[in-house]
Length: 128
Image (cartoon, rainbow, N blue to C red; front, side):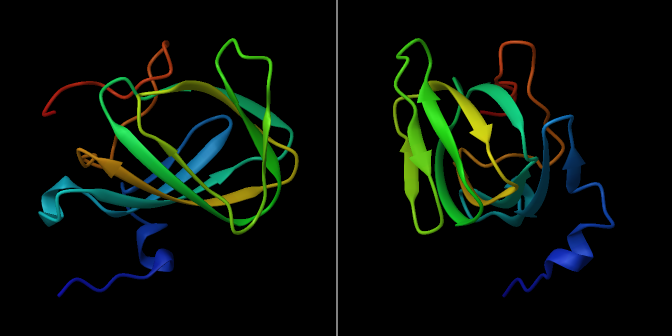
């Protein structure tokens, strides 16, 4: 059984920070679960270009407001607590936070835990 608390992760290399977000990797590839699970905070007033071309992701909002816009669609979709969205087709998108968003994210294949978005908005394909 694996038991962890966010406060423990926040002080390790599994807490990854970027300009527009902070991600706390609760479960990673080394845990052998077949997926990774993170609590991610998207900072208020930011926009992030994301394209998980090597991963599938499901996201559940537990706090805050923002929007996700499929890349090039011009049609933003509101995000608020209780909403789930799944990027089941490696969807390229813009993620905007009106207020701080707290999101629970699940990745398949699992992340190692130290990844950062590349210039194209994707995590690397290594070990996929």
